[in-house]
Image (cartoon, rainbow, N blue to C red; front, side, top):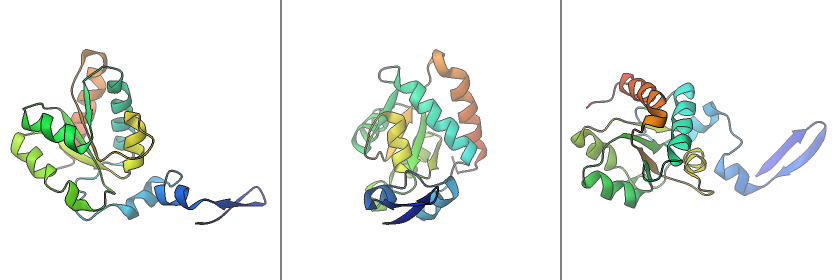
Length: 156
C-alpha cells in the first residue's frame, strides 16, 4: 500500500498491486527472491526466456507449467529448459526441483517474478515453474536461451 505521484496528482496504490509487484523494475523484483534462487537470469535473459515461453505456448504440449505437471513430466523423462520463479514462498514447495533437474541433466535458471512467469504462460495469478521443450518454430530462440542458461554456471 502506498501513494504514487503521477503528473502532479496523488493516486492511491492498491495493496494487491503493490504486493504482486507487477509495476516493479527488475532490480526491485530481485529484492524479493529467495536465498536458493541461483542461478538467477539477467534482465536480458529474463526477457528472452519469457518471450520463449510465450512463443512456445502457441504449440500445444511444448510448455509444461505448474508444480504438479512439471514434476510428473520430469519424472516420466521429459527434458527441456526449466524456468523457476525466484520469489516463491514458502520455498519448501519447490526446493527439491533444482536437485531433480541436476540429477536428470535438465538446464535450469530462475527469473525474479512468479507473476511475470504466469503472464508468459497465460495465467493471471502466479506460476512456480515452466518446462519448455524445443520445437522447429522457435528453435533459434530456444538454443540462444539454452546457451545463455548454461553460461550462468550452475552445477550439472
